[in-house]
Amino acid sequence: GQQVMQIPQYQHVQEGEDFTTYCNSSTTLSNIQWYKQRPGGHPVFLIQLVKSGEVKKQKRLTFQFGEAKKNSSLHITATQTTDVGTYFCAAYSGGGADGLTFGKGTHLIIQP
Amino acid sequence: DGGITQSPKYLFRKEGQNVTLSCEQNLNHDAMYWYRQDPGQGLRLIYYSQIVNDFQKGDIAEGYSVSREKKESFPLTVTSAQKNPTAFYLCASSTSYNSPLHFGNGTRLTVT
Image 1 (spheres, rainbow over the protein chains, first blue to last red):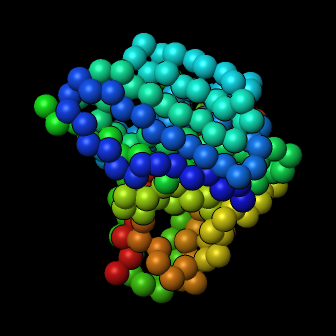
Image 2: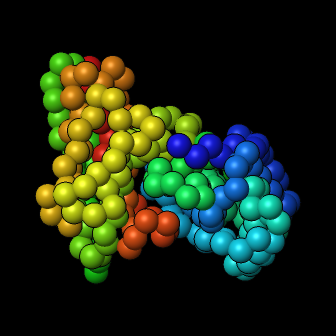
């Protein structure tokens, strides 16, 4: 299936600092989705990006889709303790029917 | 309220036994998915179904089986052939292929 690489695996920040996670693919993606999983919980859908170069914002969260549709990023401004969790990107391949493939996720740990 | 129900939340089995995990949705979604999550890891696709009476293998289908006899239900059987069955199993659904996923709360399976 589609391979998506996500970095970093872990990120420790002080509360109030910014956070960014990156997702990369060797092939063109039809779209990319972002999910958040709180400790002990299940993934929850955040957003879907479809267009080349697309940028979407949700309060302190900014999502970007690369011009070549091979990479994406999630940036959180001024992190809060409620942002703790694992952030996953996920993608379908361009023309196949392989199901949604998830990156390994970035674990965000916030120190107060 | 509509949603996805997975049962049970915790499941314990002896090695060599088959076990079936339940997944029911009342969202009227066409597509359903099973993922496996190991500690600190991302989600790996086991099986998915885009429509009733049809399903496809994901990246790690060996040792698992599914059925999709009804739109609402997508049970997963973990067979004795699965070498490392202990994991967190997540069921999800989406309106159609390529759409965002809605996840159930998951089932934690422990095999000893």
